[in-house]
Image 1 (cartoon, rainbow, N blue to C red):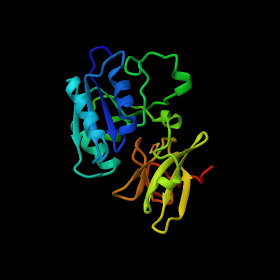
Image 2 (image 1 turned 30 degrees about the horizontal axis):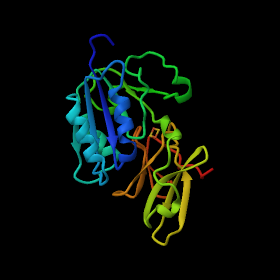
Image 3 (image 1 turned 90 degrees about the horizontal axis):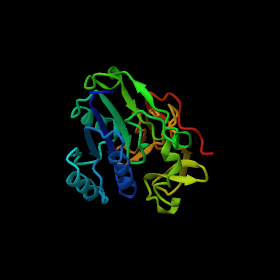
Image 4 (image 1 turned 180 degrees about the vertical axis):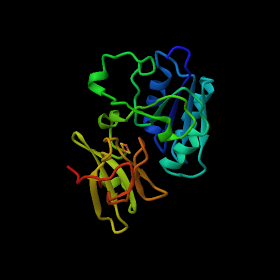
Length: 230
Ligand code: FES
């Protein structure tokens, strides 16, 4: 990768609880990224202040904010239009990039955290990057807590990811308070889905698959519905 430029795009929506750790992992790369763009998808938690602090302390960090929550596909398109680079890592607030990811060296944690990076041709994500794009899948998500500790914290008409043992569960609470549970593992390549409040859907941050509140697939590349909760 000698002489090549590198960029990292970090997608965030209401991820204040994990945002500092995610940013620290990005800023702590042994081969520093040339550009770090945070796309904030209309967060209403403490995310904006955390992002502003990162922008203030490192000139490589910039932010683009959606006025309202647009969901992952629209946010990704917006962010990609703002980055020109040779190599790009797409990551989300739930990820923790291994320190040597950009350097391309193995790391002692790699086996435990196996990010299972997938290389995509630029045609798959647009025309902005010149060479292959590395998408760091968010397998670290399996190790992090859920968005809420229990289903009682989920408002009616909303969804949240909760942890149950070793599993992440996508829980939708309908307007009558009934719970609908599916596995939160996207059926494409197993990234953990996020709830999209604006669209009332489960969105996958890795490649943009979307599922309705009950787990039925709306948009690919996933072709199967979210699996029943384990
Ligand atoms: S893992 Fe690829 S769309 Fe979800």
